[in-house]
Length: 340
Image (cartoon, rainbow, N blue to C red; front, side):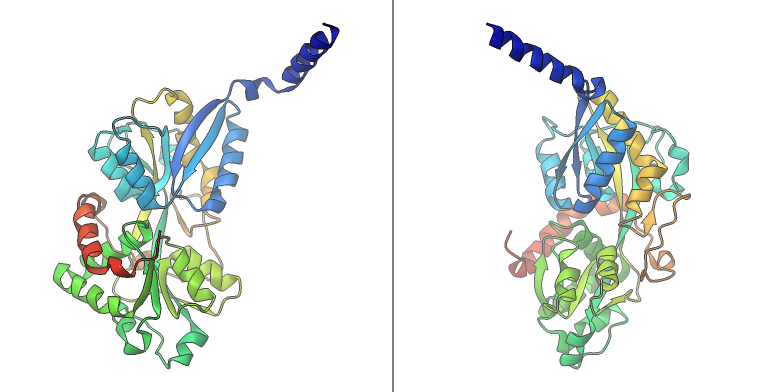
């Protein structure tokens, strides 16, 4: 009996030693396609600011997270979507899954990163673009010329030597396919991709993986996430970062509140934090273009004047056309996709 009393007393003492806020934290389930190395810093910073909130990440690529959210539409499991392509978030809005909410400090965002609706259903975090990476020694081996335009990727010396993301699973892949169709027009865009397909070695399921492969010398040319190419170059890879003429495709990562979830009050605090200067400084470690005007991310080796080359994207149309474009792309090119 004494032993049981002592154990009970010890348990109470341990419980008392746990801070009160840790005992009353509300768990917020956050679906995300943010880069993996962003998750821990964002979680730590948010939970330090809001000690009554605990973030539980569910992370995967853009296509997988989008498919999961749509599959769960009748019984949503996410409280917040934090860091997903805007074209995907607009699909959720189409299905009436989003709760309007104007976060604190909304005015700190650049106009392009704010939903024009009042109250807004989404807020932007950052922009991710598609760059070309060229492994200079590997290009020299095949006597290829350094590409400066998209058409330069069609040169015969690059046959089977290019890697890019699968647009059905990668947001970076989809933004690039949509950009070609927008800039070139439907007919010429598909013709271009038919010819490019001859030079493709594999379509990856990640927007970062192509540049990693090119950096290692496994491929000669990569098409993929802008900051991954820049990071690989900065870390010493023999990679030339190319911004092809003809317009650059891009997407915005955004945040939204899921409608009708029981943890809405805590989830709104997550949205508030996602808009904050502190959060944007963390985004700026990974992305060169962020949503707040008072945060200037200037990564080493990032090409100059990129924003002037970004296409004017109709995100609503990009979302509406997604299913049709992906079905056609899959029909034509999925045979070279990497195993899942």
